[in-house]
Every structure is written in C-alpha cells, then in structure tokens.
Length: 347
Image (cartoon, rainbow, N blue to C red; front, top):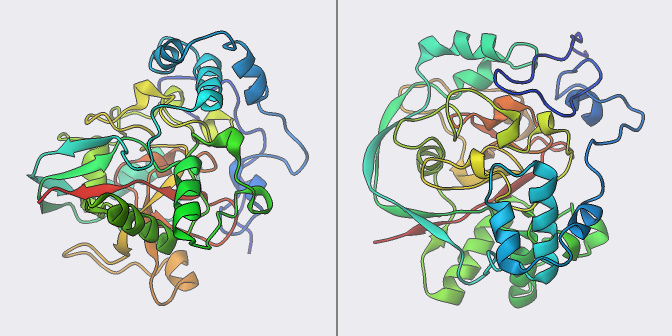
C-alpha cells in the first residue's frame, strides 16, 4: 500500500535552498524514485547549468587558482563546481590512486549511537520525510567504544581511482552508474557509486597489495567518530542541517559533484563529503548495538541473510540520511547511490 502523501517539509533551519522538491513526498520504499525525492514524474530541470558550461568560466585558470576556488567557502556553489570540473579536465592533483590523502585519527574512548530517549526528538525533527521509527531505533543505544589509532581518507574513492583498480586488477564488477559500463572521464573526480560492498572491500584489498599498506573499509564506530568529531555532532559541521554544506536532495543537483567542493561541510577532523554526495559502505554487516534490539526493518526483509551497512547522506536522499549516527544500507533500486571511502590500520 502506498503511504499517504504530505506537503514537502521545511528544508533547513539556517538556509533556504535555491531549488527544492516541487511535489508531495512519498514513502521511499513504496513509490517511484522521483516521487520519493519530491519530484513530479515529468521532467524538472535543476537550477544549475551544465557542469561543462560552468567549467568554461575557468578555462584560463591555473591549477592552483582552481584549488583556491574549490577551497573557498565564500565562493558560490556554481563557482566551486565549475572550478572542480575544470580541474578534472587538467588531471585533478587531489586524486592519487596509490597515495590517497589520509587523515590521522587518534585512539580514543568515544560514545557512538543515540540515546533511546532521543528517538522521539529525531522523529519530530524530521517529520514529513516518512521516517520509520525502527530506522532511528537502529541507532540505539548510545554506547562506549574504544578506538585504536587509525587513518581515514579525506575523500570518498572516485571514479578515476576505481577505473585504475579495474584496469590493474581485472576485477569485473562495473558500477551500474557508468553508462553502459563506460568510464565517465568527465566525472573522474566524482565519487564512484552503485558499486557493491564486496567490490569496495576488493578495492581496499587491491590497494593494500599494491602499496604494502593496510587499507580497509572503516568500521561503523570509526566512521561515525570521524564524521561527528570529538563532540559527536549531529552533522559533520554542527547540530543543524544546512543545505549549503552538503549535496543532498535539498541542494537540487540530483547528481554527484566533484569531491571536496563543500568546504564548509567538512567534519571536525577535516574530512569531506561525509554528509552528502554519495552514501558510503562501512565494514561488516548490520548487527544491533550492545544492549540494543535487533531491528527487522525493510532492509532485513530484502536481505534476510544480512546486509552491509552504509553511512552518510547522498545526492538522492534527504537530510535525515546526512546525520552522523544514521545507519542504513542498500535497498535494491536506483535511488540508493552508495560508494565508499578507505580507512587504514596504523599498527
């Protein structure tokens, strides 16, 4: 049965979006992808022009000038997007397959998850997005984790890096987001997505063998701590959602963008794109937190033998997925755009 529709909810407590959904929202597991995103079935144009046209503004800019624009939160999004698109044409120096930029995270005892008495608050805060209570209860209870020192990648793995993996390893799992399996060179510095959790783990294993280092996927506690920082923030930048800081549905882009073009959305540890662009697999399958109840939600019904957990928001998902504590996974439909980022053992 299709869930009843409602009017689009307010987008942000702190900023208005330059483009927003224009139709009543529908339940994400019982409606078409466009209806779940708040778009009518007919064509609706995005507010930004073609990425290539934006890049034309920077045709005469040097590499360093482009990097400066991308890192400047005072520049508007079209400028940052155009500069990063142009940088991709030149060969983005931020993307080094065998030398990904990694951020050191000190070992610590950290609290992960949500206190059960906060579930109602979260449900009220995101009312209108068809959240099911069980999805939020999956974050409970808040519990203490001991983390050894580790590294985590500043950016999610990009299309260009994944192409290098395929060429060198012979691995045959192509992202379904690559048109007919063609490498999208024009989006080389965008995060790869629509890969499987097994492919993400295979990538980490390949790079470990290639470099002699110990790459892997981060576990859930590592990912959440890296996203929310020592103060366990609700979003990587603070306690309130802001559409200017992440590429979610609220941005109106409806596609990936180059990594790192939301500098004001960076996590306290300096990590980019942890709240938007693409969702990210973490290591292991879903299991209840210590002292928590097992949640048999829609994902458990689709994957009765277990499913890989994903974290972070994405361009095709609403702001509730951008919360640092949110635990979700792959529902088998195009709306779910999942990629990954690397972690690395230090010991």
